[in-house]
Length: 196
Image (cartoon, rainbow, N blue to C red):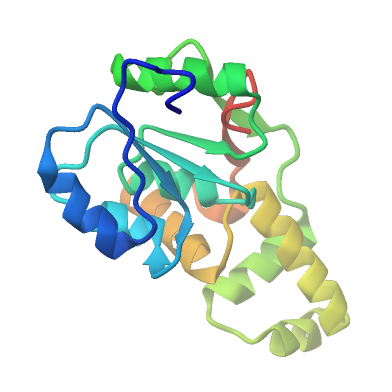
């Protein structure tokens, strides 16, 4: 960072505990936060900070739901560590300028493939709290097949686990939207490789 921004003071914290000590030292223009720190979860830390500086969550992981979780935790942007240095520098400039997420670069993407009838049945079973083995028995298919449908659901709905799936279902109900089984798959993407 200091090589890219020679006029900036860059301070590194190796842990959440150290970050908690550093944050009150002065007003910071930017915080680049790793998803996993030595002593805990970066997103949990971000949520716990009362007034965090503009934050970019940077991680080597790319899994469904991570970018959404980061933005919901209060991050202004999310990027993987494989991001090209030039693009990362652009992202830093946008976040510092208060321009992220850039409206011209983020768009809502709806997968053209609706959930299949079988995926809807598996989804209903999961939302009803049934074990995969019970869903398999009811659908007359193997547990392996049910797991495969569940993985497809998670991918299409951009969730990482059952908790996120339940939260999505609850949000849609609260917002008066169509039930999950009838919906198309919502996703966020950012052109230019920042959010994918």
